[in-house]
Every structure is written in C-alpha cells, then in structure tokens.
Image 1: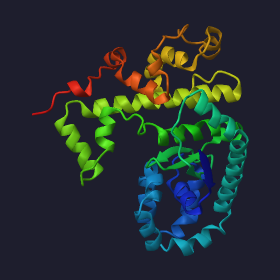
Image 2 (image 1 turned 90 degrees about the vertical axis):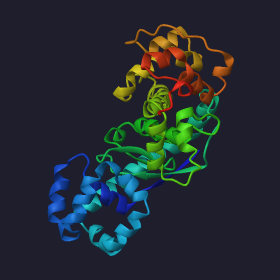
Image 3 (image 1 turned 60 degrees about the horizontal axis):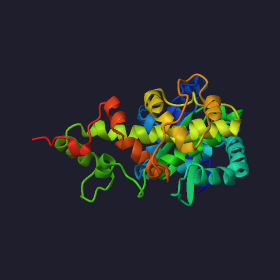
Length: 323
C-alpha cells in the first residue's frame, strides 16, 4: 500500500474556478482573470458541477474540454498569474508536508492495518491528487484515485494521514473476500448495460433495493470511520478521537461500538479512554469466525438481525420481487 502524490495545475484550476468553499478572493479572481481566458458558459458549467469536479477531471470528457478551450496554452497565462501561483505553491508545500508525514508513519500504519485491523487486501500504489487545503476535498473516485486536501491538515499532519487512509479504505472495502449481496448485484455487472440502467432495473425488480444497498454501504462506511477517523486518529494523537465522523453514521456506530471494541481486543480501561462521553462500558463477544478478518467482521454486522431490525432493513433474500 503506497501513495503517489501529485499537484496538477489543471485540476487546481478547476477547483479554484468551482470555488466550493465560496472564497471571496476566488470570486474576484474569476471576474478579473479567468473571464479573460475562458468564456462565461465554460465557467458556469464548472461552477455548476463543483461537487463532481473530481469525476469530471478523471473522465474522458476532460481531454475534450482541454482541447475545446485550448487549455494547454492558456495554462501558461494562469501559471504567470499572481493568485494562481500563490495557490499552486501553497498546494505544493501542503503536498510536501503530507508526503513527509506519510513517509514517516507508513510502515507503522501498514503493519497496524495488517495485524490489528486484520486487513489482508492491499493494492500496490494509489495516485493522490492534492488540492489546496482551503479548497477542502476528500474523495475516492472510481475506486482508483484519491483527491484530498483540508485546512485542518496544515497544523495537524495526523489529520491528513487519517483521512488519506479513510479514502484508501474506500478503495479496499468491500472486496473479493466479501461483497454484500445488494452491492454485489450492482458491482458484478456482467450485462452490457450502463450502471445507471442497471441501477434502475434493480430498483424496479427488487423491493427496497436502494434501501438495502444504502444500508450495506453505510455499515461499511461506519467501519471505515471506526478504523481511521476514530481508532487510527486516536493512536496517532494519543487522545480519543471517537467523536469524529459523519453525522448520518452516528447511530450505526453506536450499534457497532460494543462489537468493534471486542474485535480490537480492548480492555475496559482502554474503552473508557476512547468513549468518556458514551454509554458503552463493555464489549459484546463474537464468534471467532466473525473476527478473523475485517471482511468477516463487516459480514457479521451486515447480517446481524438486531442491527437490521433497528435500521428497518429486510434481508435481500426476503425482499419481494416486484410484479
């Protein structure tokens, strides 16, 4: 598991124009500089798709975009612009900060993932496109490429490592060792149809399909958060980070925590250090077969009847086929 870090000027340009964080200096820069190099329609299209700029950058359509806008030659002008150069150089500095911290900790984290988390599926090298820390982004696109940058990582390099590995785990989970049933129907698409068409077909033929799929994804996402945002971040900072994470996963994580602490093999004292604001006092014991690997643990959680009942999720095998 290795990372290869990049600062790409064209990607940075897209991020600055889309201005997801609504930075005032970028709005002024677009009026004074960008509008002289790109037409209004192009700028508005980038702004409109600010939440999916990373997907656009990775798509075949981006090459056409570069060609249509003669972006290769126009980049020479942007690279001479004061504000663009400021953002570019700050991004380079941030990338170097992140890479240095990763080089220092990577072997320790990799060993921890293998031995403590019992993750056995790794991929050789992941490309990481670094964005300016004030153009916040953390995303894994197409289970292949990570885009990352956050202002919190300027002062806390452990923040960068935590969420870098968070996105990496989205590449690695689920995998061939365990793929939940609803997700498997979608990802093992051997039919010559688009993903969008397949999604519509599955929802048309299976009762509550999207609800079951979302449940499976949320359980996996909650486990990824427990591994990285919570446990890894706690270990790196030597203080509890179990308050970190997405709000929509809080309930799932409350249900999972007693099983999670048993999976980690934590003592009562270790649990208290992590959950001083929680009602979790002890672990819930699991079968050995449910704790051999992280995939086994995820399978146990997804199949656990009381978790499914609390979430109101039927089993896929029990879902009624729509007539």
